[in-house]
Image (cartoon, rainbow, N blue to C red; front, side, top):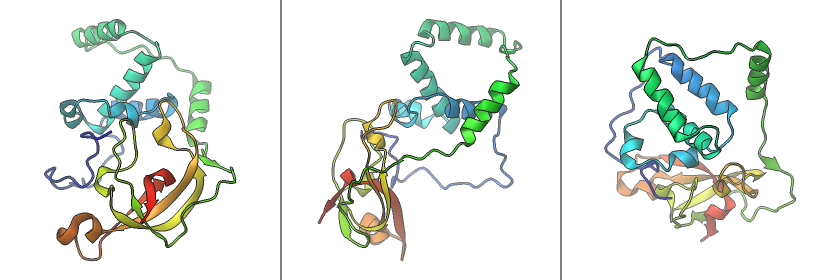
Length: 217
């Protein structure tokens, strides 16, 4: 869908400040959210896209993840909104109280092993790629109502096929899992094609794009 989350190519957000000696996590809770994100099933990105613009722009990276996982758990009936509100109110009123903790080394080792296990989204279906490396194509100018990985700023723009990745899961056809597989490509957009006269000299953008995003010129 077209929303505030699709920020590629937008102006006005200021420079990216690179912090010297930046820690992996600035606060402990962010590491916990990272762990939760890796262990609980369900789409994060598609859920985050349901945030209101004001909510999206005023929450941090890990806050977005936490909100999305909470919404997914509510949708699955893991707890109710009333139960969640009650626990939030309790800890706000009693900030000195530590949440319950369960030490289970065996479960921790299993979770760590699962998080390090390579996952392939590639399928050997025999499907042939419609486009060849070096071929000039165009990103479709389409505006899906649901989740999509097709950035708004490249729609209708010409590009060149650089690489193929075989047939892989199509994430647009979520919710909750993987959609029907289709060929996946890496394509190159020239900066001038995207930004016109204001593009930096010799600039280019490389994107991974599924076949349904592309069309012949």
